[in-house]
Amino acid sequence: DAGVIQSPRHEVTEMGQEVTLRCKPISGHDYLFWYRQTMMRGLELLIYFNNNVPIDDSGMPEDRFSAKMPNASFSTLKIQPSEPRDSAVYFCASSLVGSGSFTDTQYFGPGTRLTVL
Amino acid sequence: AQSVAQPEDQVNVAEGNPLTVKCTYSVSGNPYLFWYVQYPNRGLQFLLKYITGDNLVKGSYGFEAEFNKSQTSFHLKKPSALVSDSALYFCAVRDGGGADGLTFGKGTHLIIQP
Image (cartoon, rainbow over all chains, first blue to last red; front, top):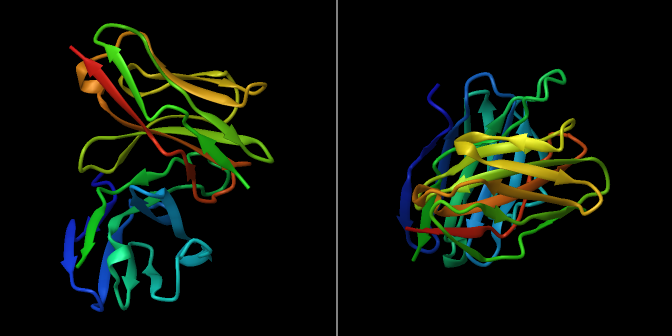
């Protein structure tokens, strides 16, 4: 199993530019989560999907952030326009909840380190 | 609302000694509790979880954790520390087993001294 795949691993951009982060969940998993990690705020949940449908986006900091999951094997997190305070490590995680299987451990990708200058 | 507290920013242990990393939680329903480890410039790796059943949970790399409902704690333990255990450890909680996202503690740096 390849695990959760994220790209790019590192992204450096200038303020005002659009940034797109990508995630491929573990095959067969039905939940996908986006988290952000900063020194000040730790790990925060941004949004999560179930069967490609956004369930809770209350953690998305503002309208500059958007996320999509067009199919079961791909999700994007987009920031437009980007700001220096968006600099962080963004993690994608997936899990299988299914029909009460309780195999609901979230498995994390390696993260994308975003730097906005 | 749910929350997790990891009261120690850093824990120092000599190699071969037992280690404990503390975690307390707050949820309104039944707690689902998790420990993850993060090595530098890497993602989070799952160590173990408590869902129900035996209060002592065994996980990867010789780690275990004890669920204590009365003290709302879920401390991570290992009988004999290795230098390679040095990393950042996160405790996380979810309420009631739903597929909501995890709420994480701030993390504890574990340093194992040779």
